[in-house]
Image (cartoon, rainbow, N blue to C red; front, side, top):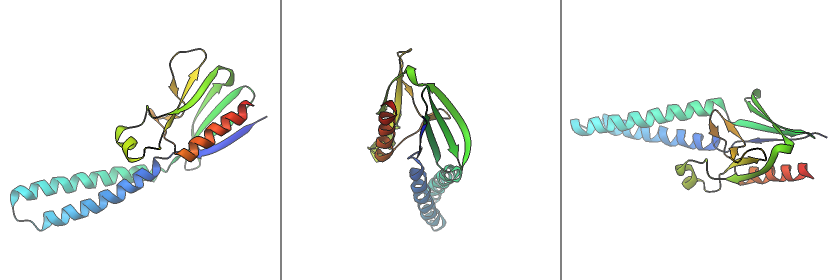
Length: 164
């Protein structure tokens, strides 16, 4: 019996907000830079405008890729985790269902700043029967994927239903 669910990472909205704020602040500091006569403040405002412009570009590049969608598929013997971006499958992981001891949400992989801005955001850890170390369940390019409260409840309910 196959069961599957598709969820999306939470951090995508953070990049949209960051791009908009950076663009506005870049425009404001550039306007201030353009209208100042003092060389000391010209240098400072030019630097600040460039920093906000660079942040806007980096946020835009994150937005361009789109959010990562995760598809979980559980069969009788395996748990298959597929990562998709823009509808294209980019990575797959496979776990043996018998070796998974526990899956639980945690804030251990979440950046300090994100933890303060969005306290409800968490990532998932998995513990196995054959090792003592807990690993990130959903990890892409070396970073743990973050989930909102609704997504977390959906994932936990999915695993609970699949284990019955």
